Length: 220
Ligand code: SF4
Image (cartoon, rainbow, N blue to C red):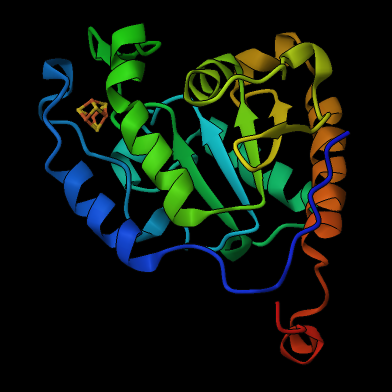
């Protein structure tokens, strides 16, 4: 098991993230995404987050409507309950998608095409570099595949919750929080997966109560 000890030093690159947000807002790589919202902004989280979640794509009633990934629709409500199970606050996480725009067919959500995922991969790499989290959590197979194209890994949903070394940090495979994934993994099992994820995040980042962190943080 790969456990890279974390550190309370400042991580992440705020300037790089600002620049990336500008680039993404102007992105026109996918003709299929004309008129869609580019769901990357400060609402996704802050540089230096303890864990970066990568899901599949914004939903039409979720990120497309609110500009906040994994919010407002049933998938978003499930995810917020899973974060509660992990004991993670919203400001400790950064949330993004393998594809930053909402893929649609006949007005309904559809799975992103492989070429759309490939088009958006550079944005994903730059997001990970700018946020620089000690841990990345992949929510489902689309995220796992896109991350494998950035750097090879052996994480699969058969080893759900088990961290592997990846791209200078840890990668944890988890199920997507959407209702369909519950056919394969019940919500109760997913809550347990997230509870273990929260424990891992605390182990990697030496998380302590916020009031103690500045005094406890040794120079590194
Ligand atoms: S999905 Fe990604 S690559 Fe395609 S237009 Fe949207 S931001 Fe650009």
